[in-house]
Length: 609
Image (cartoon, rainbow, N blue to C red):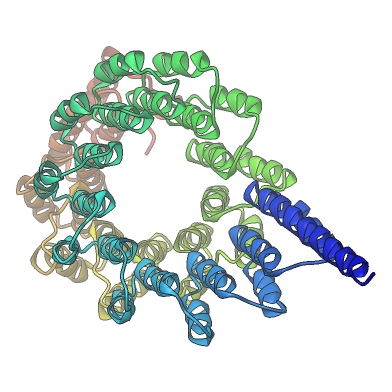
């Protein structure tokens, strides 16, 4: 009689265990398919849960980046096993929370080989190779996975020599080991070393072939890349996309198109790569033909075509395609906003920002940079200030791109103190930040402040570049600081070994010319190591008019006419110089030459001074 209740209890327990097992399976399925909300509802509704249940939910939360929620679940688990601890350590490692991973590892009651491997991976991926090596050396047993993780750490750090030395210590490297070192050589541009290693590989899979192919393509060894591609025994879509992309980037569009026609896969990425190559070469019709011939298009494909239209100045076509685009991302919006801003349609750029906000698309630093540029060009100070507030609230204030755009925006609106405040609040201003503020001081007539900032820049061990010197020489020119300008021009070549470009010479000619030192300015032009541009001769011509040096003006004008035969202002300027000197015949000749050369002179310019 006693056997009956016992059997019933066992049956109930078995049924309960079976229910938990089935629920765990469904929970795992939902988690792996990304249905986190459904997985959570199932978890919360389960009358019984075991450690497997908790581990499945823990992994699901971690996979979706919900680390804080995962940690609360972990802390509330009635029982934890090694899988629970490892899942939490892996989650922290995957999301860069190295300190949390270490704290969990130290608190873990029983560690297995995988626990140690996770910490090696955590430190190696975070670039902390010394700590990764310490954990690796302390491991009692090391499998090939742990060796490969350390090897990958050296490769990630851009240290192929250390990677090579470490590789030599692996007793039985597998194909992953070989491919990891091969990738390290390729990423470092050591293509000969990569090929030597590739030829020594005892076993090659399609990944190893593709890594070698990508190395050739990345460093423009296209002949070798094409030859290797033809040798690949089992090409996959990555092989085809890599070679087609490389040929397109190298301008070998016919070869790329021939391969695309032979490709056995219907690969969107390869077609997009060729489309991009056509657009870079302004071959819009060919790009359009590929785009509209595609049965399936991804977001990158749409963005590439829109960006191509923008780069070719075809904003109407870009706008039409943008409106048709089914799923716009931040790149799509940024392309249109930047396109309008760069083509002078500043109001349209800001309008698209408002449309983007209505779509609840979140702006990034690129969005704010383009909008601030538009505000600066419109001298829309109040709108610019509103964008400043958005940048602060969105957390992009420490992003150099957004910060630099703010500096330029305030400077162009004449609010140099506010530009300086933004600069001072930046956590780590880069060379562009310094250049933007120096240029802001220069364009607002604060030459002394520009020079002071330049010296502050040097004191902070920030190396000036060519753009810096254009800004500082321009500041000296507008402020009439001749000695300082000469000092900086010499500093450019002597102290920093930079080669002066046309803009530097134009600034110096303008500086000397404004001061009436026309002979020195002319000698500087004659001694240029590069061909003088229209900007250089234009600066000299303007100085000649200012100081009434008619002979030198004629010489400079003739040079300008050769470089810019259809630029009306050059002819008008020379005509006015001759008229001011009372040389009416020559002034009339210049006006006649305007008509003979087919130069269209705007009304009101004749005789203007």
